[in-house]
Length: 154
Image (cartoon, rainbow, N blue to C red):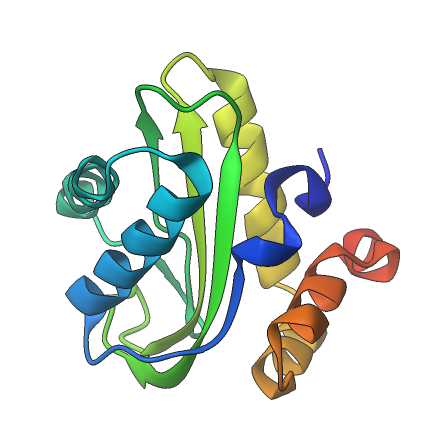
């Protein structure tokens, strides 16, 4: 599974403005609703339910909010580079500025876990994250996320 299988160019946001974790998730849910045609509220509630189990902030400024949701046909990703880091209750107590949202069909099974592992591997690569943080626009972010060298490095 490649990042390009999860992410389309219109699912990448540069300079997302949000003051806190809830606003990040609201903005991401809003944009995911436009991509998936699912109700924004259902996406947001799914993300919030997952956050209640434990923060999806994985440390080093990265969060991967995710959930299984009824009505979605295929695994769908959305990436955002935040304008300003926000507290995400991450394991390392560091604020988050790179967010990769992942929505999966309810019956995705192991594919959901494989996709999470793939995104996690990519975003654990410090060189990739430094480039993502410095990217000026969404097209550059998309190219960095989907380039073959990023996949090999991960």
